[in-house]
Length: 464
Image (cartoon, rainbow, N blue to C red; front, side, top):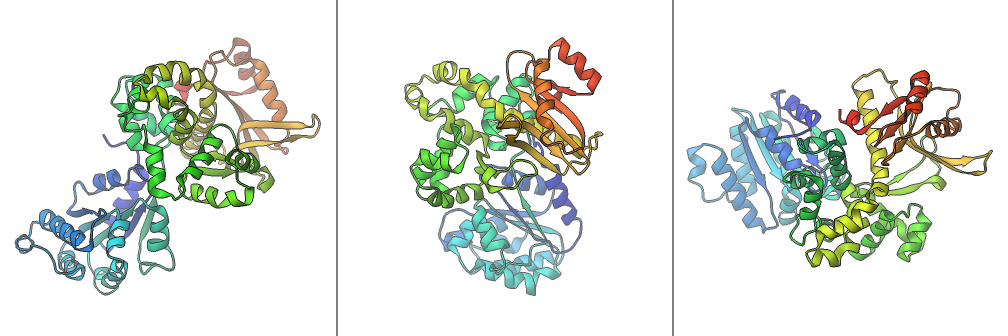
C-alpha cells in the first residue's frame, strides 16, 4: 500500500503531461521514501529505472546498459553487451525519446557521479543539444542532500538551470504516518509516530507487528532489529567524527536545548560547537527554533528534528546491556515505558501543531495563520520565564494552545493559566484557545469551554 505523497505525485504527473522534455530532481534523507515515490510514479509508464551503487565506472556503465536492455523492448539493445560510453547510451535514449514519452531514472545519482565525475557535464551537453527537443523525462534522485544541492542544483553545477522541477522529500506528517497501523489503538498509532517519525521505511518495519510494544521490542530492543543500530549506522555513513555528533544528539535528547547547555554536556566551547550543529541541521536531524514572532538569537533553542533519533538517543544507550542479553521486553517495561509520557509530551505538541496546519490547509474555518510554533519568554509582572505550547498567528488573529499527555483529565486551571499567559503575546488580536489532552477533560472544564468557545481535542479527534 502506498501512503501519502499526493502532492509530490501530482507534481510529477503534471510534468509528465506536458509532452515536453522534463527534468525533475528528487532528493531527501535516506529512508524517506524517494525510491518508493518514483516506482509509484513510473508503474504504468514506459520507463528505464537504474539505481547506482558504489561500483567502478565500467561496472556502472555495464549495469546501466543492462537496465536499458531489460526495460526497453528493442531488439537492438538486446544484441548489446555494453555501450562503449555513456555518450553512446544517451544517444540511444535520444532516438527513443524522439518517438515516445520515456521516463529515465537515475536513482542514487551521487554514486554514479563519484564513479564517473564527468557525468554531469555529459548530461548537460546532451540535454542542451539533444534531449530538450525530445519527449524524454529525466529524473535524478539522491540521498546525499549536500551532494544534490551542491553538485546538481547549485550555480556551480554543470546541470544548473536545466532542471524543470525539484522535490525535496520530508518525513510524512503524523496524520499520514498513522495510516501504517490500521489495527492499532489511537494512542499506539501516535506513539509509533513519536518513535520513528514520518519516515516510511521505519513505519513499515513497525507495522508488521500487532501492537506497539511488540514492534518496539522486536525492531529497537532486539540485537537483530532493523532499527537497533539505524541512527549510529547513518551517522557513520554521513559524518566524520561520529563520536562528537553522538554526544551532541545525546545531550539534546536528554534536555539540553541552549547552546551553552549543549557545549557544557559535550565538553566543547560554544564557538567550536557551531560547525557540528550546522551539519546536523543540514541533515535535518537538529533544528534551531525561536519563539513565534521573536527571531532573537538569544532566545534560540536546539531540538532533535527526527523522532527516531530523539527516542534512540534518549533510551537505547542506557538499555544496551539489557538488549545484548535479549531482555528487550524488560527494557521496555522497566526503563522506557515509565518515562514515555514525559518523552512524548514534546511529540504531542508537534502533533497538535500539524493538526492546526492541516485544518488551515483544508479550509476548515480557521484563519489563514502565517506563523506556527511555540512561545517562551519573560512575564514582566511575575519576573519569570513562561511557555505556551502552541501559538499560531497572523496580523489579526492568534491561537494559543496547551498540550498534556497525562493519564488524568485536563482541568479548568489549565485553561485559566493558558489564558493568562496568552496575554503576553496576544497584542490585541482576536484569540482562539485550544486544549489537547490524552485523557480528555473534566466536566467543569467542558462546561466553561462551551461558554468560551474553547477547542477541546483528544487523540481520537486528531486522527483526521
